[in-house]
Amino acid sequence: MRVELRDVAAGYGGAPVVRGVSAEVPAGGWLAVVGPNGAGKSTLLKAVAGLVRSTGVVEVGGRAVGGLRARERARLIGYAPQVAVVPDGLAVADYALLGRTPHLDPLAREGRADREVVAGVLDRLDLAHLADRPLRALSGGERQRAVLARVLAQQTGVLLLDEPTTGLDIGHAQALLDLVDRLRAEDGTTVVSTLHDLVLAAQYADRLLLVDGGGPVAHGSPADVLTQEVVARHYAAEVEVLRTRGGHPAVVPSRPV
Image 1 (cartoon, one colour):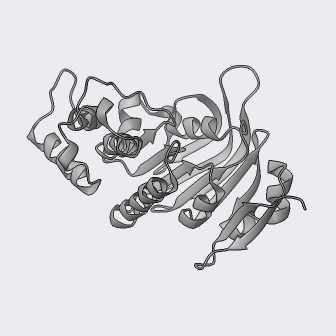
Image 2 (spheres, rainbow, N blue to C red):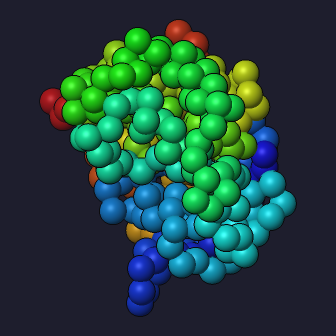
Image 3 (tube, rainbow, N blue to C red):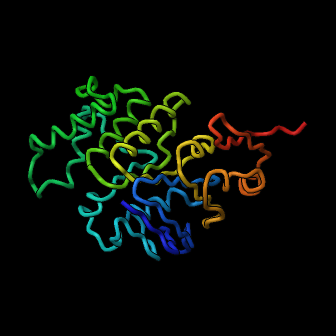
């Protein structure tokens, strides 16, 4: 499902936090929004999700997000915030089942088909053996997968992931992004994420959008965006840009000697 942004500005009242953003993500593509702290990345993602007031055009599958009701948006877009509210009293399967809510009639309860959807999602995320475990008993990586399970249970064409690797070590972060990439390949799901780690962003996303000071400053392939000059300027950092075995740019700090 295609995502299109045209001259988008968004904020929480007063001056916009992010402005002048235009980008296109084809169906099945992955756009990673990167930039220094406070650049407006999370606000932009919330604008795509229809969770903050915005101007300009935000379209998902050719439909203007601003004109959709909450239930309609939730059928098109799955959104995982950077810090998800995870009720301690729920088990993993019950939490994932919340993702079926947009597909239910008012006052209706989940049925057999909904539980089958959740069972399939838990199996794909290697969470089936934890289905009855309380959320509070999960490790950080397991909890992140549980949040992803709830979003995937919505069965949307677009996934919005705000810093999905926050708090994860490199192994768990890699495993989670591998999983998202596999689901994207299998289902044709479009992914828009914010990512703090530029090395991971370069390896998983097709294209990067670098924002700084609330506005876009670079947009293109990882190799085009993550140059030494661009990163040094917008992150105020001394860096070197190396290449992985796969040819992806790898931004590393360069300590002055």
